[in-house]
Image (cartoon, rainbow, N blue to C red; front, top):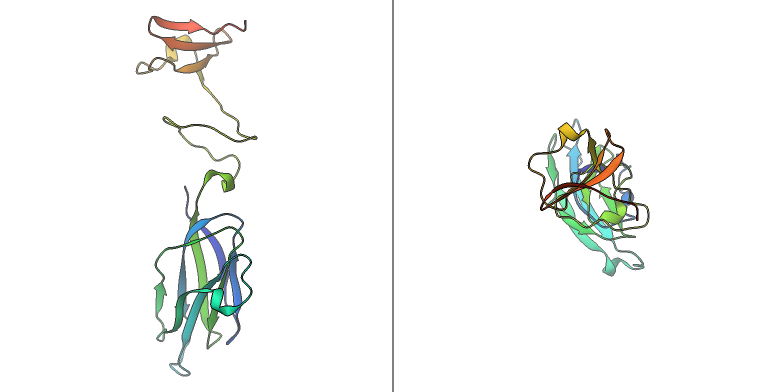
Length: 173
């Protein structure tokens, strides 16, 4: 599964700012970079998750709280899980901090469409999945294909399956 950037923000100072919201569970990390040109005032950053349906601050999960971020420095948090409906917030004491969030989606339900995957010993499920079979001429049959391998023969316009006795055409009846 590809790592994707899920949010990028350069917030105003002392402002709780949404970095990312999540429709699907993810494993994420946050990078904070101090782009100040002076060492004063002192730069402190906070990063937290407001779980879905949370309404008070005591329900938040703080990833970092008032972390000192020196002039020209950056850091990346450890990777942490977020769930569907969670919101990721950031805050800085100065307006010269840049935050980005990157992560990996957890689970097939949130995968983007047209994701090309090579499947080995996998189960395909869902309502909108499309499975494309290997295709080619008789000469292009894979030598290492095991029993049960199904492909479309473009030379004969037939589905064929590898059996213990060789390649067999799949009949419609």
